[in-house]
Length: 351
Ligand SMILES: [Zn+2]
Image (cartoon, rainbow, N blue to C red; front, top):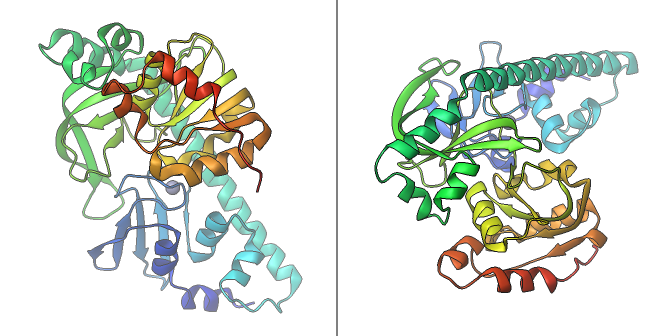
């Protein structure tokens, strides 16, 4: 098997695009995009560089996907092993099996090292966040700066809930962009933000997300408080674990609105950060039943996939032709009608 030939022949750019990357050509053999491997939204969170070694290399800066060449990319994207990835790329596999095994083992070790390094970075970032308790100062801004609570009220979150969830406001959050060398980050611009601390059951902080109020691109509105933090579903009631009846929606602010409107202490509501990420968090619902899945109108496919993954018998699907938070804000959905929606939510067909 000639690995060099496979790598040289395969086009990482078109594969990344096939996987969902929206590439921006930064010139001199460098591209940036959202990370297609973990469906990231940050449009600078993934890079492809045409290296000096004649190979294209990719790196995920916004998730835990690691880095590598086109074969590593296919392994991650398709969820396949080294040999299958080579076959996917049209490689000739009539090679010495010992060679193939050795190459596969090398890749595996590299992936494991990257995974451990990413885990260590994440743990350090969370420890730093806990030490700084940054979300508390953002919450103070909200309380002390005139008129800022209104920004949350307009999104359907009254003051009492702003305090419970320790929601906040920042006037000049720094957004980092890739530097000239495409490997370091530099402060690029600032935006006021709404800050959302995301707690796991037991009020364990997992990240603080910033909703940019002046985003440069309307589809790219969220940033983590600091580098290396990962997104995590918003758990509306961190007093208890995720068990019993659970309602899943897309987005933190939507989850808040639904939780407040439902007004049911026995109902846990979870906001998944982005429709493409529904499946990434299937593990969270191990002890939940029934799981009511309420995707946005354009996210039904992802909701269905989550149901199939969890087992359709414990899922109920709620499909609306409008966004549920808009309906709540407009007074079209209240406690009674929301409860009725749950009560009559149909089972999910098995496919
Ligand atoms: Zn990634």
